[in-house]
Image (tube, rainbow, N blue to C red; front, side, top):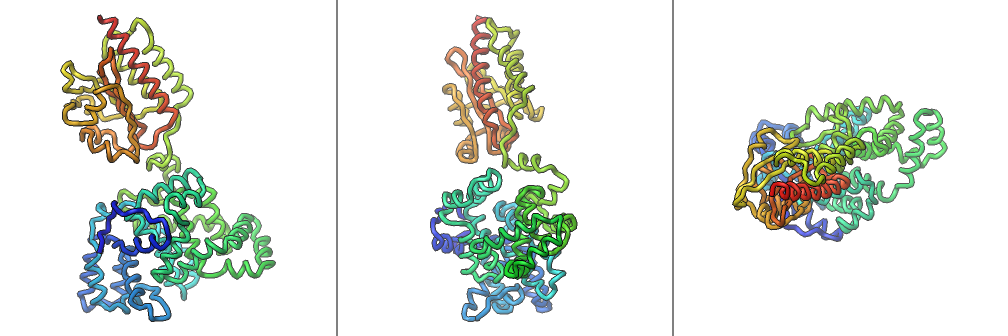
Length: 511
């Protein structure tokens, strides 16, 4: 069996190749859950229901057991659509053997993309149970397991290719690019068709496959329902429109739609509660339940809070946090949006600092005076964390001259040039290096640990500045570690040129 992490795996470009690769990946299970379930399987006093309840703590375990049961029961007409049925079909011994094969990991050692995706699935399950299961008690198991497993075709992809999913989210959700174009570029296939193919191959609950078929081939009905749902201030007119279209009414009222609604709500809430995409799912749910939108929204928020109480984990984002945390703040915190460009007042201050740097003969009394003005110019152009270091006469050591946005202890930092090939490269000649997720791993590993600890994140600007043909200063700057504003990047480059002019002018005056 291949390992659960797979940085070396190639990116498939066809449905068959994707299916083969995703089927080969073992999903890691939290070690605490792994141990509890193993203990329960060895305890003859435990019922199947109790074992199934313990397994629910780990979505990976739920999927693995259902897949194994359905793989070994392909001759049966119906797949196992609940965990109890799956355990019963496998038997306790084979279930235990399966569990022994699955990698047990501490949560912090599991792929973050997998944990985040499974948290969304758990949130969707909470929404489905809270909104629909109580109203359809006979179907609660279909609603529960279908909502939990709806996104499960993507779980192994989050292990094998997390960066692809992150790029898809950034480009499709946050930048609004065409999903079809992005998915063709990233995956070679439609993501919905891939999920449907995987769901069918794994014999996932019927409502899961039905949900993907709806999104692929019944979009016309979905669009008609969305249009009617927008008229939520006139519920009587909504009912009249549905009565005039019996086919649409039958389609809308199908219980299988509950898991699609729950996952649509949970996924869109990851972006925000108040976006048009999120509102669309809220309106559809309001139409499905025939309840006022305000009541549905209140229930959604209550269920989100309940889900956060049960499933929140350090390092993961739960939409319940957005109920108290403004969305734009959260997006920048996660590094999904570029930092905003500098304000008009900031640019005015920046131009003033640059003018001061360019004055000839130099107006600076000493090096500290010059670097203070240089630091202020960098902050004014939008840099949130700044460090200016100068070389000693022997070019063996770098000492901090100015900092901004960093802990005060950083002012005492001294770096040995010989210990970092990146520093050596920067000091060989005037150079600018821009770190991003594409090259961060390559260069970050070659930076001194003290610097990496101060400039956390994946986006960083590094620039070496010369005076009289010799590099004398290094500048490190970023905007909190997230994506950089292009206006600020351009201003950073112009500021660096101004600082070089100031260094040369100051040096000439001293001479």
